[in-house]
Structures are given as C-alpha cells and as structure tokens.
Amino acid sequence: MNKKSRLHIPRPTARPGEKPDFSYLDLSPAGSLEKPAIDARTRDIEHLSSGLVRVLDDDHVAQGPWDPKLDVGKLHIALRWMLLNRMFDQRMWQIQRQGRISFYMEALGEEAVSIAAAMALRPADMCFPSYRNQGLYMYRGLKLVDMMCQCLSNTRDMCKGRQLPIMYHSNKANVFSISGNLATQYPHAVGWAMASAIKGEDHIAATWVGDGSTAEADFHHAITFAAVYQAPVILNVVNNQWAISSFQGTAGGERRSFAARGLGLGIPGVRVDGNDLLAVYSATLWAAERARRGGGPTLIELVTYRGGAHSTSDDPSKYRPKDEWQTFPLGDPIERLKQHMISSGHWSDEQHEQLETELKAEVLAAWKEAQQYGTMTEGPFLDPATMFDDVYAETPAHLESQRRRMIEVESSNGAGTSSEGGAS
Image: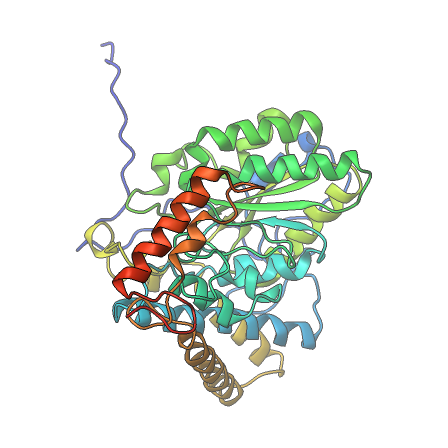
C-alpha cells in the first residue's frame, strides 16, 4: 500500500500538566569528544556538530581535552559574574512587576553563555548580542546603574528613551546595540568581521541568536557571506529549547542540530553544553583562535534552557510543564560551577552565601542610585525636545521650527520638562 504524504507539525515532547521529557536531546559523556587542531578541515570534524562538547561530568569534575584548565582566580571571577547576572535579573524582574519599568527579559539558566564567551574573547573583539546577553555587557564594564537607567528610560538613559528596555549598547566596551528585529545582528557581525579582515586586523566578531532566529532570512544571508568570504566571526546559536511559545523543533531542531546549519557551506559546527562554563569558554577560545589565524567562521550551538519566561509579557506555564527547568539534564550553570569549585576545595556553601549577599547589596545600591535619575512614575523626566536630536547632522529648518513650537506650548502650559526640575 502506498502511503500518502502528510504535513508534519513539530510538537514538543511535553505540554503543561505532563511529565517533562528531554529524550530528544543527544548528550555525549563529558570529555568524550576530541579537541581538533585549529586548522582542522570542516569535513574532518563534522562529528562535532552532532556530539556535545562537555567538560564537567555528573560529579562536577573536569574531564577530557576540552578542559581549559582555568586557574582558581578565573573560576572565582566566572562564578561572581554569573551570580551578579542572576541577582541583577531578579531585581529588575521585581521592579517591572512593581510597574517601575515597562519590560524586562532575564537570562535565568543561560548565564554561562555570556560570561564564558566574554572571558574567552579579547577586549577589541566586537560583540553583536541578543537580548539575553546582559552578562556580556556587565563583564565588559557597563555599569549596573547605566543598564538600569536604560530600562527606566530616564534622564541618564544611554538610548535617550528611544529603545525598548534591555536593548543596551556600549561603544567603549565594543558591544553593538541590541535590536528587537530578530537575527539582524548576524549580518552586522559578519560585515564587521569582513571589514576587520580587509584592514588586516586580528580582531574578530562574535554574535548570538536564539534557536528560533535561525529560521530568519538574515541568519541564512549572514552565514552565506561568512562562508564565501571566510569572515573571522563566531556565529553562536543559543538553543534554549523554546522561542516565546514555540518549541525548538519549529525552527528545524528535530531533523538535525543547529550546529550543522553551516556544514553545507563549509562552516564547521560545534555543539556545546551551554550550561558548562568550562566547555563554552574552551569552544569559544578555539573558534576565536581559528578565526584569527585565517580559518574563517565557526558556528557554535549552545545547548541550554530558558529557565524563566521569555519576557515579562510571557507566561510559560501556558505552553510547557512548570517543573521542566528543574529537570533539564544539563542542570543550572551556576550550581554546576559552584559544585566544581567546592569539589576541588576552592569554594564552600558559606562563601557562596556570602557572595550572594554581597552582590544583592551591590545591585540594590545601583538601583537606589538609578532612581535618582527618574523612573516611569517619578521625576526627573527626559526632555521631550531631545526627540529632535541625533536624527540629522544638521537639523533642518522645519524640525527646528517644530522644536520651538513644542517648547513654546509647554512653556505656556507651565509644564517644565528639564532634567533638573522634572515635569509638573
């Protein structure tokens, strides 16, 4: 009997009220994958796109050739920044629920993705992040106060109230502005990397998108350019299992790994345990050195899990089991690094609690300072006249006329809008 063709609709393995099921994840034992030479040919390392680079085993002991053998000082640094990322997220989530900011997105469960990469890259390397890479900004020196002020759209907002909260940027730290349009950072990163190569520099670019964004045209345009011109760029795909409400299979994750997306173009793919800071650090460093030596792009899939809601506008209990995060087989990145340090005799539960207390106080102090520059409900407020700035090199006459008229109307209404006096 001939079977009729049927349309396949990807479906998650578990829905609300059902038992979490991660049987679809292919996991390799820690330390089981070899680490190839920097100049290995893509055809010879295709298996890295289907296996899983892991360093920490189930007992939190580092195993295998991908172990970067970080010293104790760097382990402490990594743990501190990941924990600060989480403390910051918790505070900002609470602030949004209090109605003081309009929107927020946390990185719960994905902290190693940003911190490990930030540690492996050089300061002059250009980063093109997604909206869950706040740890990258923190590590590269952006002050918590400035990040909070951007979320508040207040008088110290780096974006002058023109961007959605959490869409930071930092020219000084070489971190490009976050875009709300998915996957646009991929072509930007590839173009920047191509320019770096043209200038004969050894600076590389790194960029991140979620699994859902790999279905966007910009993703495919970018990897084509990266492959053809051998751009020195690291193309990260953060596979956190869920887009805002759709399972990663909807973007094609059922058939083959996201790390394999570039194989047809000759781009090596490396699938990495995204909740293992040591593995992410090692894979990023390998890809960075490959790019600097003329080896071109590398596509890294970071297998992780979005522990919280997609954003403050999302309720994940509507589409996945409530306890799914607790049963994710790759665990919590912070807890895993903590236990690794404890097992090696370089950390303790008491030290961890003390660090948590210290970082919570640091975040609270930053919040108290940020409020002084205004909130959504409390002055001072941004001067509306700034909407005319930064549009043209020389402001045309019709906009200058509109600015004057607006100021005159506000003055006649007695509504002061200066950053010092606030709105009445």
